[in-house]
Length: 474
Image (cartoon, rainbow, N blue to C red):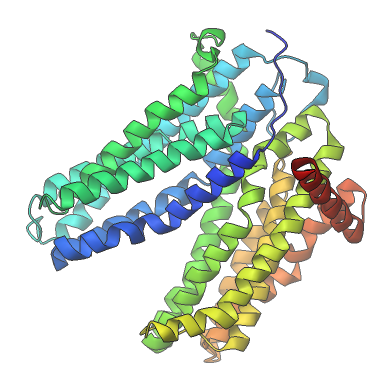
């Protein structure tokens, strides 16, 4: 071992590349859409949307794996000599990287993602093949459909398996490098897909692009992670008992985070499902559009907090409580105005833009938008505080999240029972459930841990922003 501890820090380039990757994450599908609509048949377009809906589950499935393995990598690179099922032990925190433990964590991460990818691949090749066989009328609806499906299954396997590089890079604090790899992946995907589509190869163009792009992105991610001689420092030969040891301490939180994410997704999608059953299609479109645009607001406003997750874990394991408070407070102070600006645009600007472009879908009434934005603000706020709690490898919100999901299901059941299924009621049910506990509990827990009031928290955030701005430009 050698003295090579460097605290994780976030630079301006990290932030810029993160926002660029968010833009491509949101806009890649839109950028490729003209080529798809122009060159593919209606049947191919329909199949493409089915494949896209399946692909959309990948981030959901990864929600439990990525945060935990990212924290593991961060802890080790900041001197941890042991990993625990919950929390971290300062007594076993030294001033150098334990490369034997690092090697074990890397191999365990690879092992977990490989099994994860194989499991999803098996489901796709079995249940998924049966489904596609029916949907495509024995694979006859579209030319080369069986090969399209095989290539799609391979692309999903590769995408999921190679996600472990994201955890490695983010955990090491290589935010910019991780985002560059993601951007390359998206740019290659769009370039290959558009090029092959205009060569009149049909839907198989998209399948080939989805398979090749992550493989090329993997080479760049590998280069970034091992570029400073790390390959020579880590222990190549790791016993399976060491890998199993890492997995055994990681699995409890992986399970908790996965169930929390799936429960939240099911509850959020249940509202859309109920709207389709009990509301006119025009209102369903309004409800869906409101959710889609609000998701963009949340994604953009929380990006700075998301990319600092490894830095928060780094401050934890190094015992730098002062810096943890400053960085988190400054991130939250920036989160609030970004969200509010987005909400203002959604409530007062977006309806006018939809009118200008003569959209067939309109947003709900302004008062509904205001209520919904307030609910999403409170939800995003407590999620950010939950993130800072989980940076200590502690997941106290597991039971609360599942109970909130159950209460939301009961609330929706009461709406159906009493025939109250308007958009306002659909958003109020989860909003009231969250307000009853989670909206205030996790911010309160963090402020209590920090030993500061809400006003002092905001004041610290403002001071840190002023200090950072002054150091950059003065």
